[in-house]
Image (tube, rainbow, N blue to C red):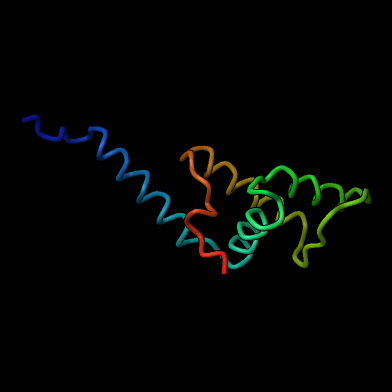
Amino acid sequence: MAEPVPGGENSTDERVDKAVTDYVSGLGDEQRMLVALKAQLYGGSWEPMLDDLRNRLSGKPYIFKLATRIQDDIERIEQMQQFEAEHDIDLADYVELS
């Protein structure tokens, strides 16, 4: 019977799980709200939300009016989007959406 190899596949999964858990626990209220909005209003995709925010900044029609600062939200979304891509996850699966 083969023994698990240190640094093998299982430890990679554990590192990803820990990275996701650490990242999610460090999310602020604004970021959690954006994850919830992504899941509930934008079909689980960041791009339509980013389009809305950018359209609002440029005076074009937009779908949803967010109460927080738009540029800050765009930066938060881009950071979370990058984290999701790096770890091949959807933060909505890990954040309580209430």
